[in-house]
Image 1 (cartoon, rainbow, N blue to C red):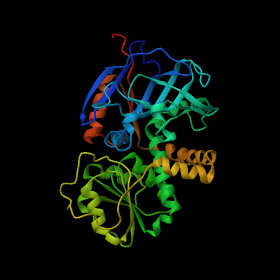
Image 2 (cartoon, helix red, strand yellow):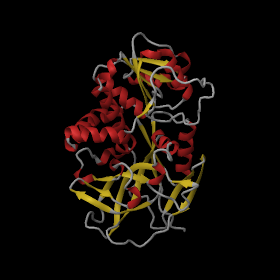
Image 3 (cartoon, helix red, strand yellow):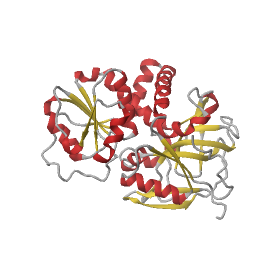
Image 4 (cartoon, helix red, strand yellow):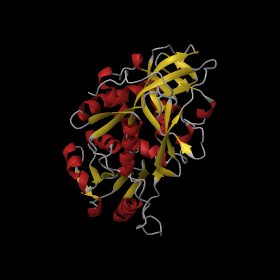
Length: 376
């Protein structure tokens, strides 16, 4: 368990960590001027947030999937704020939807505070109904009240920040395949097999008896094999088709890997899903330009499957099923996950740069805090 970060915050000027949209390696820390709250608003102090390869995917697809639009910067043409998942505390409110001191879990900026417009409040949580967030999927705009969350454990906040959003995606990816009877395929292939989203998918698919093949680098092979949820681990350079048909879930976003999988299986590839972009900087220069053999890759947008299952089962039943699966998964990850607390702009910047470069040990999970700067 990591130390608490609730006491790390000074009462100074808020800060926001920004990324250059046209050069993700370029970052800066900017003051986030406090504004007086209007009616029906709440100021949240961002206590802690997770930083994983998932957030690199948010940056890579920032424009295409509107991730940059959640937390606009002062210069939105050039600079963006990467969304993260974490915990915040209500420190000021003019809304009846929340109370000062209430702890919330949800989608946050890489910053020390956030002002929201609470709406559609219920016992379990509230939704930010700010106009700029209205076009985005509702799943990203809801904040869960920790006191009412059956999945919340104060001693396991690190696991929830680091893994729950990724596991939520893993769950709905696996549920999508299960709902389609795995397209009658014999094997599920996962790229970037050491990524936390891929591990979650493998865990769930393995539990329901699917054969799972993980693609990874030589550097991560031993770790991936040691997880025990992949039936076979294959290096990218050694990729060759197994017997039978396959479905492919691509976490890497590496065009060469994607082409290799499609070429190996051809018409025996029943479905190709694009999930993430952990290999964001590899544009596939070695892949031939003549098009992919087999099916056209389909980008997987988790909120679409969430909406489908919410309609099928009702949201309470969906939440119950995910919570049940999460409890088993979270306990299992204690065998390999190593949360690491990083506090302050320099440490957070270094963690972001390491993830962007793809050099992070897959066991490591960064839990970050950007305390307000009392010197400003």
